[in-house]
Image 1: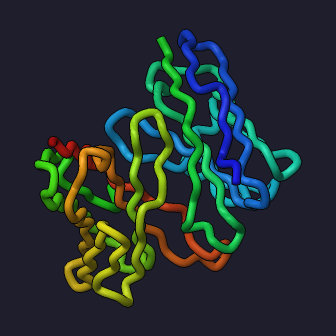
Image 2: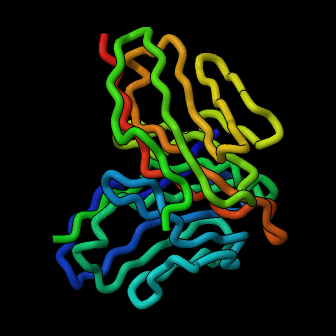
Length: 114
Length: 116
């Protein structure tokens, strides 16, 4: 069974530039999550999708972050404009609709903002 | 506000030792407590999980001990090996009317090193 795919794996940008990350969940997983993991901390949920609808985006900084899952499968997370404090690993995870507590994570995208 | 407090931040044990990682929570509505293991350059992977209706769960060399009255749970790794060297995260979630369970709230992680 293929795992959660993410790209790119690494990205370096300057502050005020924009960046986008892509995620393809495990086939059949209706629920998709984006997390931000700052160095030395645990993952923090940014947004949760159920199919193509948003379930929870309470911790997403909506002035600069946006995410979509138009067809209910893969998803993109965008930051525009980026700030230095956005440097982190961005993790995508997925789960079955009725097993949201059992999440499978992708390898993440390491973002460095200079 | 940190909902799940994890300790220690880092831990070094000899091969064969039993590292213990502790987590404490405040919200008594939490009813699912997983542990995740993360190797460098990889995403976290679910290791073992427990619900508050039992006090202990074992899977292979990994054991969760749960103390509901103290609102604490811990991970024990028996006969630890160098390959267990990783960062371990505890987490918690609660039942939701909408989607079964709320999103996971993670601790800050414990970096474990097992030396030969």
